[in-house]
Length: 160
Ligand code: ZN
Image (tube, rainbow, N blue to C red):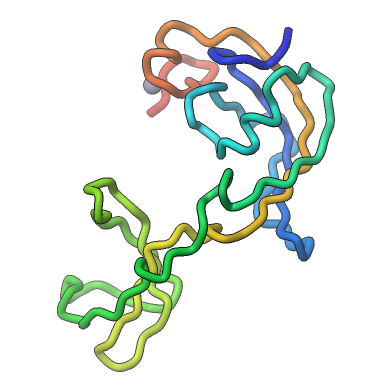
């Protein structure tokens, strides 16, 4: 069986930066996704298409096919009054907000100077090359329900 749309694919992976820093890793076969449903970055999904169980490969995914380029317009300085009064703010705090196009985006607190809070709406991995070390562990047909939902369900059925 080869990887194509509507397959549930389990992979082991190590994700590193160009400097070799490990950003993420899964090596016990527990990471699975639905192919062709935007569950993973497009550059990695494209590289997996047509692969079979046991295949191992490396792929470098550019920001274009990963989490996008950094956009300076996504960085803003706002007043502390923009936040709930009891919000604990420190550099690195993340929260959800509505993006310019109405879609939810993740905002990260980038700097705090008195009541001036610098927030960054870029994805933490925007502008970064993603180096994946991949091993294909399992491929199976997705269920009707998984295809309808656009994501993989757990071994016991539905997990949300
Ligand atoms: Zn579901």
